[in-house]
Amino acid sequence: MRPPCRPLPADGRFLQAVGPTPLVPVRLDPEGPTIWCKLEFLNPSGSTKDRIARYMLEKAWRLGELCPGGDVVEASSGSTSIAMALASAQMGCRFTAVMPEGVTEERLIAIRAYGGEVELVPRAEGIRGAIARAASLAKERGGYAPRQFENPDNAEAHRVWTGQEILAQVPGGLVHGVVSGVGTGGTIVGLYQAFAEAGCPVTAFVARPIAGLGCDIECCSFSARVPGVVDGLSRLYREADMPGRVELDVSDDLAMRTARALIRRGFPVGPSSGLNYAAAVEAAKRLGPQAQVVTVFPDRMERYFSTELVQPRPTPAPASKAS
Ligand code: PMP
Image (tube, rainbow, N blue to C red; front, top):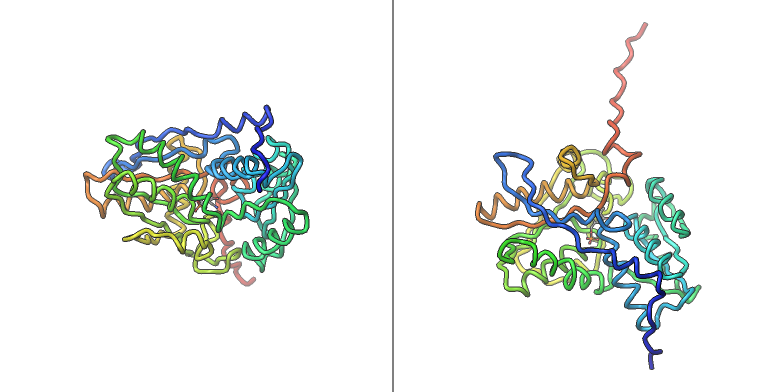
């Protein structure tokens, strides 16, 4: 039998600051479509992952799977770790992030600032290696492992929460297209389910960043220039029932250019928001002028200050002439 539900610590109430976030119409190209964009970077730790962190940890707490002073261990290449670090700090728990080497310094700094610990696995093992290590570490410590890549509560958080907010915000409560890149798949799966269950004639568009240049973290055809979006990793996504889903390839150059254009327009977003917006424009073209297309801006630009998002890529030096 499960232990009784316990109330959250009083200072954990800051977690209530997660959501609701604005949904705003954005049209970058005066000739192009208007896209409804959910400003998820406004959540407390700076990303949409605050939702799944709060949803999963509070549930584990209520069920007695997570104890006061307990351990939370999660594999993530970034945003989820930062969100889990914040939520764990709020709940008085110890947090350990398991990540592949090569993640940006900003992420490590943020996790440690919240009192979290970081364990790095070799770069070659990638996020798969991190997932395996997190599972064994959680077992060793008797800790709670949210397992975002397979835990249905990830998509559930977006189905019952983010998705319901959007339905109340979008004109007429009507969504024809929902667009997102896939990391765990929680966002696209949960939002698609919310809109389909509300009776919307909705199509899911999955944005795939395609590498123009080499890919060095996940070692697949996907571009490493759009952190957080990975290929074929998530059981949650693979097993989801999304009839008629459409996969849209977007070059990583277009994703980066679009993210920079959004920043100049006053939306302080990271690369995956550029990917999502660019794919949403294509989705809107396919669905026609009357369609209401929704996408998500998952995280903030500050997380990428050391990267090409805000710093020009070094141009290769011209070949020096033989003297
Ligand atoms: N953008 C960023 C910056 C992310 O960190 C993630 C998740 N890792 C995503 C997009 C994709 O979201 P989801 O995991 O819900 O598929």
